Image (cartoon, rainbow, N blue to C red; front, top):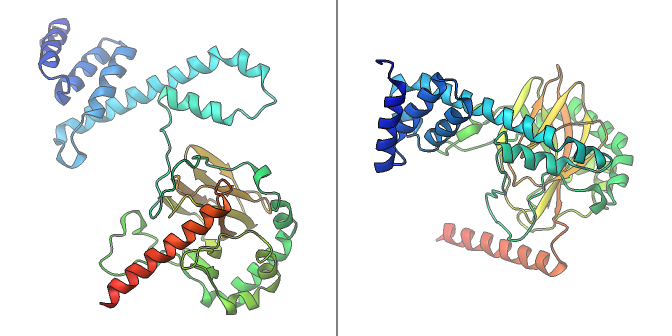
Length: 340
């Protein structure tokens, strides 16, 4: 307060020798270096302060603004680092411009601090040593061409189902009273995100499938994940205009999800990990839903896609059989416990 910034920094250094994780000392040192125009130094100490900050609910109100400034300064420094690294490797990157460098670009963003490391976070079963790949290479799924070739027929049946049987659709998020809804509070029991199940937890929904015979015949020719009591699940997923699905993760990395866009009245986006893509009509992709993902419908009308699950291609036939048997045993064990 007296303007003796160097002396203040020296005093803070003494504090940090005694207690290197002292949040207030770290934040204060960052603020003083910030005041001196030392952008790199300030960001370094701000970053440490953010890492050692107490939970927001117990943070004193008078520190809200300094914390906001700390986050802003760190983000700006991360941007500068990313720009520096990108410029430094530009010539090398240009030599390989014809190759797919998305993975390198993501590594640079993580290295610079702009993006976070994205890992698999399955809600049910984690199968070790499977790669954490946001969007899988199409070459692993030669049947995608068959699926896309039939997109028009599938879209026609999806549109007919919405026009004549929308009362059969149900909110995808359906938590019972008393269950923690977390990020799903807005969409719980909300028809803004509705689905028509063709298969549900491994059980074919005969009425819906009978109404969509061409879609059903197509799906029965595809390598759907077969996990009795769990998979396959196949749905027409309808998202209202200007509605988003919050970040979440799926049940297990032993299976992947396939999306086929059917009705896209305008822009619609999808994020898996650090990768954001726009849906294109009739163009499918396969992704790992145990990596955090979210969706946005930016259009003025409903967006519809077909979603179904398939086995992870890196599982052997023996592993698939064992996973199915293990999950079935787990389900039986839980049901037996409920019956007691």
